[in-house]
Image 1 (tube, rainbow, N blue to C red):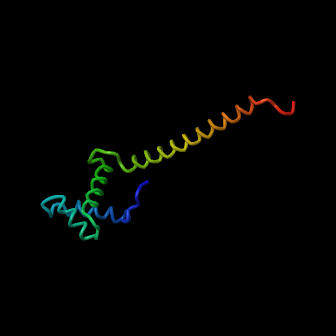
Image 2 (image 1 turned 180 degrees about the horizontal axis):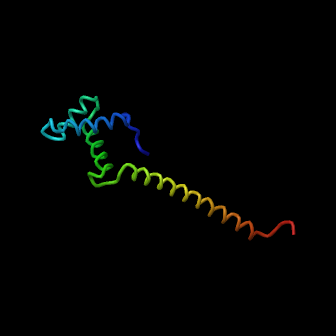
Length: 108
C-alpha cells in the first residue's frame, strides 16, 4: 500500500520549480535542493531531490517510469488481482455444481 505524502501536490510542484529557477545561484544542484527544502519547511532535502527526479522522468529528461505509467501499472495489478479472485470463485463454484450434478437424485 502506498504512503500518503504529508505534502500537497502544489508544494511539490513549487519546490521543483524553485530548484530549477535557483539552480544557477548555487554551486551544486544538491545545494539548491537543500536551500529550497529549508525555505519551504520540508523536513529533508532528499524529499525535494526525489520530487525533482520524478519530475525529470515525467517530462522525459531522465529515463524511468513516469507517474502516469506507474499509476497505470498499479491499476492493472489491482485489476489482475481482482480477476484472479473472481476466477478462483468461479472454479470453486464450478466444482461444487459439477459435484451436485454427479450426485444421485433423492426424489427419483
